[in-house]
Image 1 (cartoon, rainbow, N blue to C red):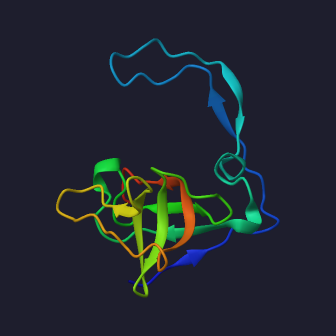
Image 2: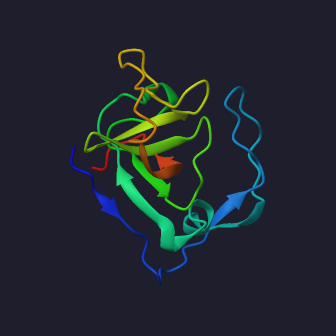
Length: 143
C-alpha cells in the first residue's frame, strides 16, 4: 500500500462558512430557516493540534460498514492516545492499515466489513501511528 501523507500548512487562510442553527432532518423535512448561528472553519473543527496532524487517503473497502470508503480523506492525529474502539492507522509487518482498535479482551485490529478478518498482532510488534479523528467522504465526483 502506498501511503499518501499530507500535513496542514502552518499559516493557512481561514475560510469561515455559515453554520445554520436549523439542523437537517434525515427523516421528514422541516421548514427552512434563514438564521445563521455562527461561522465554521473546517480547519479549526477538524484539527486540534496542527503539529501532530496529517491527512491520509484511504485505499480499499475493509472499513465500509462505518461509512469509510476507498478514496476518502482521513484526518489523523498522532498525538492522540489510542483508546479501545478508536479508528487508527497501524503498521503490521511493514504495511499500513486502517482498522478499529480493540484493546479488550486482547489487542486486535478489527475490520468493519465481514469480508475481512480481525487481526491479532503481537502487542510488542503493534505500532499505532495515529488516531483517525475525522474522515471526509465525497458524495459526488468532481466533474
